[in-house]
Image (cartoon, rainbow, N blue to C red; front, side, top):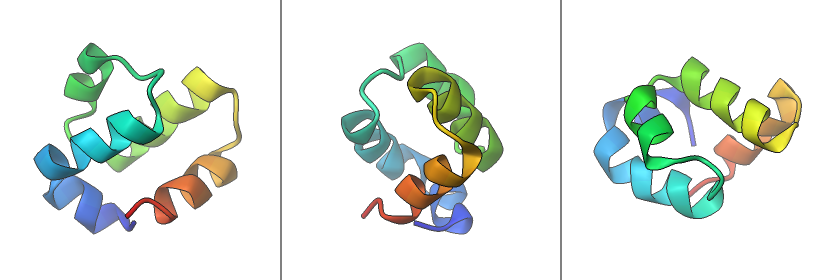
Length: 62
């Protein structure tokens, strides 16, 4: 999943992100508002993974 798709279609992607990264709260998802960098940071923080791991996981999101 690339950055443009996430940022351009956040409303549609939000459900997929929530399903994949269930530790992210609805409030956090609302704060992200499709911002790729913020999303990466939230995933890293919630799951204790590196930026590279978060980017790899995001790239595999369909």
